[in-house]
Image 1 (cartoon, rainbow, N blue to C red):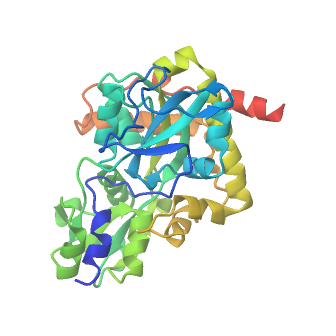
Image 2 (image 1 turned 120 degrees about the horizontal axis):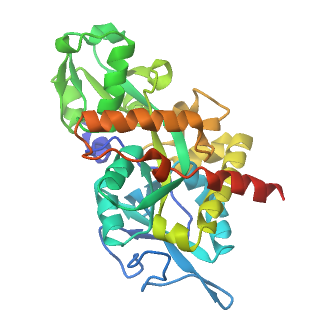
Length: 360
């Protein structure tokens, strides 16, 4: 098919989509392990290049993110990087930001965290919970999107959720797509026994040949598919309770123990970026867009609540309730072996300290 090559890069084994270009310090490839890549953790200087301002040498905060050398997925953190806030706030506490891109997203980021190749990460809650459950000692200091939107792309004569009964639906099992799908069928009372689930990554060919009738994925990807004439977006997360996932900013606990102000600096940068996004949403859309998925696709993702309040880095009580439910879901589906201690994993104090410092 004419469009197959154009979108094959989107069909990854996870429900992640690539975000926009980051302007933070260096951007290294997690696969290439280039000379400037992170090689140590715990708040110590890496053996690669370090940023300097005047005579001062900064420690590196090596931040893993899903993507490639020139395009990473970090939600509001993309804008914080582009506008220079993350680097500025980290410099103020003796650090510099070094973004390390991983094309295989969550699994590779977790491997790098375990090996000490990076000491922070911005990625989805599924791999974050996996790493914590496996004993990697990190702390979530902020959220970068509390309500990542999902949806269903449908082809043919499917015009309602109930029409999916008797159809073949692509759902990547063990991923955020499955999490959304299970909440979606519950919300619309779909007879799951009447739906054939296809666990596959080649959605383009399956949908084009009629071997699949629908596809569950993140909303920006589906809007992009729709623009190419491959189906129509049937539904999104807006009417599905807990039918979303989230992106987190986590830091190695050892870094925070040595330099707790790092957590505050991150929140200050994200708050400033949020204020810019509210003032000019187009800057946000442009920051998270990639060569494949344009700003208009991301505008559709954020349209459900134009206040963008879910992009504030605050870890709210509502968020913590969602994470408790997610914790249970991951255990019940054998995706993590040990439940995560939510109270120790999420630290809500850094946000309030950031608010107070910005108000001074």
